[in-house]
Image 1 (cartoon, helix red, strand yellow):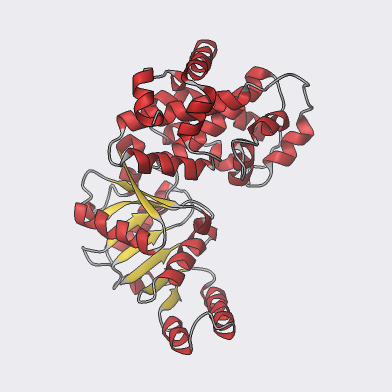
Image 2: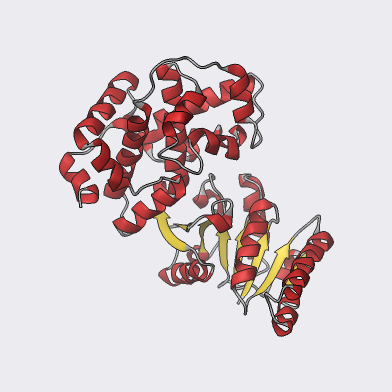
Amino acid sequence: MKIGLIGYGKMGRDIFSLFFDKLSDAEFVVLDTFGKEENTASVVKNLDKSLRRKKISPEQYEKKMHSFIFTDEINDMSGCDIVIEAIFEDIRAKKSVFSDLAKTVSSKCLLLTNTSSLSIPEIFSDITNKERCFGLHFFYPVKLTGFVELNILPETSAENIAIAEQLVVYGGKKPIIFSNEYHIYLNQILSCMVAHAIYLRESLGVSAEELQHEFAELFPVADPFEILNSVGLGLMGGDPDSFRIERNKQLLSYSCKQMNKWLGEGCPKEPLGFIDFIRQHETASGKDCSSAKLSIAALILNELVNALEDSHENKPEVFIEAVQDTLGLAEVPAYYYRQFGPDAIFAELERLSSTSGFTSYSHASKEIWDKYFAN
């Protein structure tokens, strides 16, 4: 198998590293406009280190040394079976890449985009043979996350989906499939969680730091504000219409307005700027915000139930595991259903719906919730 990769920023580098380490018989072609010599030297240096430490044999070393090239010529992609695009989030740039690529590779070569926010049908709108086109969305950092999203088009063939699923499994990850408005769903529920944390900060009149203290037990690795800090307001504060599930647009629009307000006040748009900014612009309120843990659990469980009822490409247990993995929850969602109880959860959702008017907080019946969380 020959795998092409277009884009070698932090995401492209992680994707390459994952498959280069895992796939012993694959060949790799990386389109790298600006740093092909430097990046080639870096890969060779890592191989040299692995050989010295006896992590690979001399035979494996020689095979790996001849299994990859970095190039600035798209024509070098011509023999690829799969090409993964991982450039910056710009719809015109991605469309241009695939337009050029489609003229170079065979009609059977899979064309995959790693976009985390853009319209996948629009990215591939100029491509014929759309049965080979879809999204293959990795989360960053790639090696620390368990799932990869296959964001398929109506035209995507079952055969090509199976090929991509196998590739993901070879890489040590679990595939999960989404279509239509559920494209990039794990990012959508992540954004809803962050948006709800922002709403709680404003509606309760407390600081982000006070909420982080309440969230700590649920999110042992990174709470919603730490995720916002890691991703950056420039990306998370973008167009809420890039996420297409209607019920969540009010909540996402609210959070986008607040994030853009912070940007206007001087918060850096780049990653790792939010926490420092917000610490300098708020003080502890001293108010009781102990309800925040219940509130954010209610939002997460409610969105999960709504999605499970509406999207049927995946087994419920796979869907639930993927959400837990992506959000970094300390326990399985059913644990929080038992811990807080349906009466308290539904009362909190109804309070949120009444005070905000956001449809994100509308909930299904207890019987439906029990179907997913009561066992």
